[in-house]
Image 1 (cartoon, helix red, strand yellow):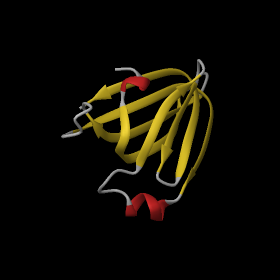
Image 2 (cartoon, helix red, strand yellow; image 1 turned 90 degrees about the vertical axis):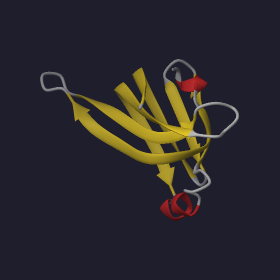
Image 3 (cartoon, one colour; image 1 turned 60 degrees about the horizontal axis):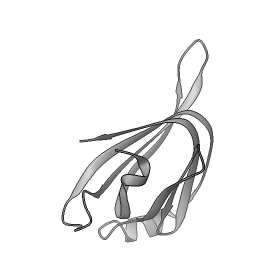
Image 4 (cartoon, rainbow, N blue to C red; image 1 turned 120 degrees about the horizontal axis):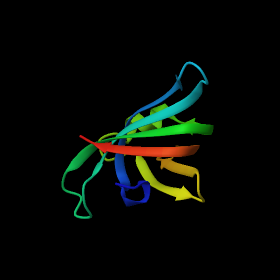
Length: 108
């Protein structure tokens, strides 16, 4: 699954984690977990984990009160890839933009 293939609208953000990765030459990774719809019919959500590696930057602003208020119906409004290495998720009131060299999406 590719980032642009995910049906982001009305998804539910579960977590955002920023962590150091590696010992000899440390870098950072960002992991986002979300429940998103599996198809355009929007009947059932699936759990995905997105791991961004070789992170060059992260910018975020999130209004937690709005995220909680919109959790049942979906607090993710849209997501897309911008250019070669920039990934953006828009929330009901906020966003996260990650610049990364690697992206891995797993479905569980």
